[in-house]
Image (cartoon, rainbow, N blue to C red; front, side, top):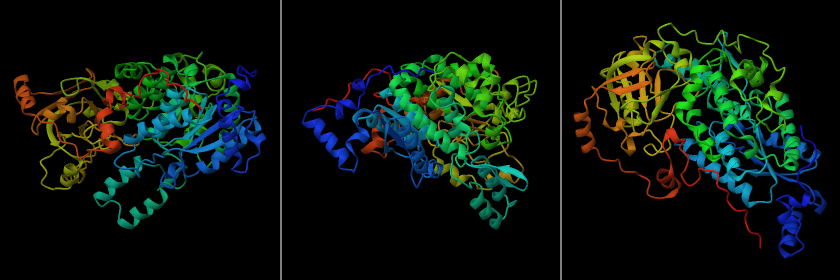
Length: 585
């Protein structure tokens, strides 16, 4: 690790605000002292911003107020001065219509907080789904030293002797409740206990997927992403983030020195070995774009073909993040796939990824598997079933769609069935309990107008509910297709992120109930078996849906957002062209 400063005090950004012997410098120092600070507290040392996404409506981040205090201790003890800044909190479940619509908002806020204020470095505090990519995207665009401090997963629960976690089991038990296998009193009891402590979802949902990817990319401390939120070690990790960011400022260790294509592909490899959320297939291209890099969906598919799922975690497996942490966490998993990694990539520690994970071995080979014994034993006729991700193309998704085979039913990964099409989530939910719904176990459920422009914001509607009629018959999975997303905690044979989306005239807009849909996972194809002449007639008759949004941020979002295969970032925010430092007068 480099310990000698590469930057001088005079070259720190904060000195532009505080060091000048003029009226503006006087005013800046004056206003700091207005808060009761002594001049000597903040003068002559790096100023560290702590971007905190704490909120009382974000239960995953309920503990981040206290963790910010631990970060502050670390910063002070390392010779810096910490300043805590609130940033938009994207608490999944509570934020409507979807947190995804505000990921870019948080990215903008992060970038501009770091740019407009006298900060030399930043600790990024978050973890719930879109918070992690939003913070990282903004930090990449601003490019001052930054370290990510993950919120950490919630604690495990148990029910009838089995481990219980967030999201995955909510869906599982809801299906049991819907058909009467769980009574209302028991259901209410589950509601009160399944999420029994602050922290992010303790399955391999989007939260843990993204924090692990960011760690594998080198932007978080080794092992940080799996420490349970309520573990004493989590507070120590937050303190260590505060200590380390001060040294990173002196070393001028900015995100641009860490995140190159090799580091990005380290994150992709970790994603596949974890059996991570399909949402990462949207966030990774967006993160890459902020670093001035290209990352296509087919590159993700290529890694998924080589790296099987090795982490035994819901929804693909049967364990939870607390178990993963005890087994050695991400460093132990990365050691299982060392040959897929660029081990010489620089990280926030000042060391390489290879140095960070050296000697960090698994203590439980059932939780963190060897490559010769992957989590999913794929049948001989469907080897793709062991993969965390497959990228599809075809006349339904010319720009791509994704599916998570490891959490799907192998029998449905090669499937042909009759489409039942819904134009909105409301229409679907109104029909799903109809005992006369024209649906059977071979039907392909299709939901459109759920994409980034159409919904808007691409909500997590893609795990379409199984009709009650079929649940009563014992059917627990169907092939489902949508231009929306799916919670990373969920499971089932769901084709997602269909691009282009239906609302902008993608082929999904042309499907009609009764059309035959074919999925062939081996060929990576998703097609509607409708002749081109008929599709041309439908295309000529198609009219774009009208938006209900004529003003405000949502209208900006609809006008600026890219499609799912490009990461759903705003066109004006992508790329790594520098933005000038603010003038000070």
